[in-house]
Each structure stands twice: as structure tokens, then as C-alpha cells.
Length: 321
Image 1 (cartoon, one colour):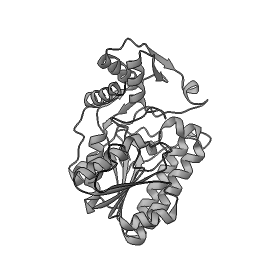
Image 2 (tube, helix red, strand yellow):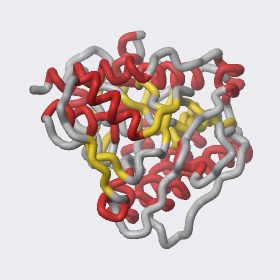
Image 3 (tube, rainbow, N blue to C red):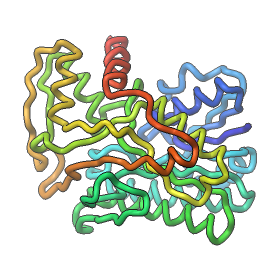
Image 4 (tube, rainbow, N blue to C red):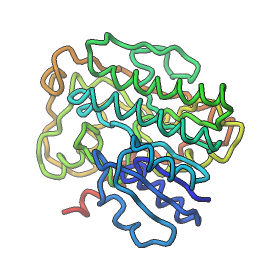
């Protein structure tokens, strides 16, 4: 196939690009490098079937040509990371909603398969865990910039599902739960690479809030396999799927495991949310996915443990020295 990946120079996009090239697909990516990096795709440049364009997905003339040439579109381009979301809400909203609308409208004209990546953030402050795709979402006040991201991704989902319903566009929506692995940056608030880098440097490992909030971390290799399986299954079209691990860990426990596995002497320190982000910042206490839908549809389950994730991230970061 000829595959188009928006946000292809990002963390997940670069891993997906490599996996698709390895199986013999042609891969074209578009990325504005706002959070992606040329370093992520340096090892792919020069490979047969790989091409890239540095531009925004909101460039309709460019995107019309790239979508027209593709068989499948993986729409990964989005604002990412809690810090970026809180500090740049305009960029977050415009990138997520406008970019997705362009991709879907152009794909619908040619009836292209489109996978739209959403986020577990859309569950907001919901407390009915594990989170199910048909469960309610609960957002905070519009005065809290944190929820602008969740709302923008929810609009992305509504758009994708509406295009499927009204125009029969083969769309798939994927809610990702804390994807982690080599090449992920901690620049915008990603906790695992941040903890690993702090531990290896002997710096304090900074836990935001009380550390009792829990998350499930998925290896990027597992996530990439899920994305590929879903676009290949017509039964997935017009539906939403959680993709994530069921291995739950508190952020304090995560910091402790990183410290142990790196044999670091770094102290673990707590940083209040209002110092880390902004006054009145709200967080989700638990984020645990129900993945029965994707398991029943394409047979996917996460295969790598949190220890596998940490081992690969630690090895990658050590290799950067």
C-alpha cells in the first residue's frame, strides 16, 4: 500500500513509518516539526518508498495531493503533552480541530481509509473505570486550559464518526493511553522519559501532585501493531477503540521503579500542580482502559509489560550520552 502519515516525524509516527516500510509499504509523511523532529526519521531517509514533506496538515493544496496518492491515511498530527496544552491552548485547538477537518474532508472525497488518533484525555474526570468506549465523558470548566485538549480530541472523534455515518467514509478512531518507548521526548510533559533522564543524570525525580494518580503505559511497538490491525479490518470502521495496557501503576511507584532500574541515587521530590503547570490545574486520578472491544474485533492485546517499556527507554537514553 501507499500510506500517508500526518505527524510522521513524531514519536509514534516515526515508529509506525518504520513498521510499514519493513512490511513493504510505501510511506509518505507530513509534519510541521512543531513537536516532531527530523532526528526521529533520520534512519528512514534514503529508504526505498519513503518520502517526507515539512508542512502543516492545514495546507489544503498539499494535503489534497498527498491524500489523493494514498491508500490509507493515519492521522497522528496533533498537539501533544500536558505542558504544551496548558501553555499554548490556541495552538492545541487549531491544530487538533482544523487539521482533522481538512484530513477527513479530503479523504471523504476519495473514500480513503482514515485512522484518527484520539486520546484517553477525552474521558476527562470520569470515574467509572475501566474506561469503556461507550462510557460518559466528564470535562472540567472551560476556564481550565487542560480541558481544551480533551474537548478538541472529542470534536475530532465526532467529526470522524460523522463522516462515516453521513458520507460512508471508512474511519477508525483510536484512543491512546500513555504510549511510551524509544525516541519519546519529555519536553512537553511526558513522564517516563522525564523520569529516566532525571534518574540517569542524578537529578531529583520530580513527581507532580501527590503521586497517587495512576496510569497505564503502553509500549509503542504494541500501539503500532494495533493501528495496523484496525485499518485492515472493515468491522472497525465507524467505531472507537481504546488502545492501551491494563498494567496500572501510580506515578510515585513509577518513579520508584525508574530509580531502581537505573540504580540511581536521585531523590524523589514532589512538585505541586500549581508550580508545575498553573493555578487550579486539574488532573485525572486514574486512567485505566477496557480493551475488550479491540480484542474482540482484531484480536489485539498489549504484549509488553511496564518493565519492557522501562528497559527500552533506559537503554535508548543511555545510548544518547
